[in-house]
Image 1 (cartoon, rainbow, N blue to C red):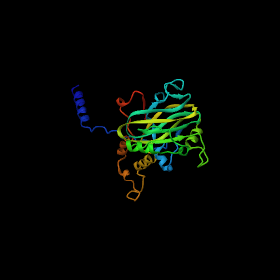
Image 2: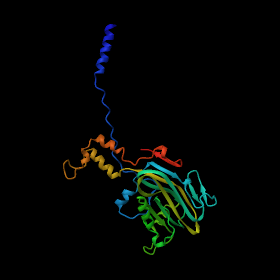
Image 3: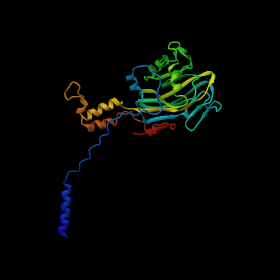
Image 4: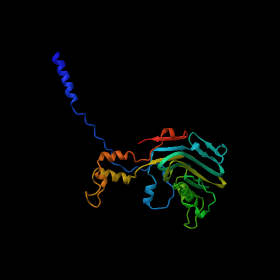
Length: 302
């Protein structure tokens, strides 16, 4: 028994001299894949190149987002059941002459966010000025020749005042003499008539620690406007584009250009475990739960 206990203590002593077990290597994520087309996702009419559009639209993560649901939208007559119906999470326009509806996501953290409005339009027989940004409001006094505008003096003023570039488009049920067709905004809404769509206003870059991001649309019709339902304003956290993720994955695999050649990507000289660690912090962070207003829904997915 003495020898048994002695050998036991000896075993313990030997075990204590062993080095600690090695940590399991960090598992690398699968190679990035281009996101499949999202059902109902539609970009607003915009100017610029396809490359510009690729950097602005479809870049937010729908699994990491802030949402102000439509039942929290307010405006002229929205609290009057004769004109609007407030659902569990939507606001539906019955009929109104003076149209003014909007909602504000408050205390949004600094970073890049893609603004998406969930909406269903059953008819386009109305004038509409649609905007998303910081310190913005809709405009009413514009003519048919400005129906295709994606920027105006009010946008410029908001950019100068807040440092945040807003986004806008318009719809008008008329034909333009310049191109003998309907305005772009009206065409877009007609193409998705009666359908719920996720209307992307593109990426916003917020520069202050916290900002209040607002969606607002207004207009109307002399013969009254009807048949619009608002599902909410969504801000999707933005990270790297697919092309950027692809380049980083090639760097991780040491396939991003010939070593020491003119096209060498220096990032591929960084240990893969460090690359993976840094990637975890490249998405715009969601706010701390204590900073989220009570009327905002937060999704904290991958």
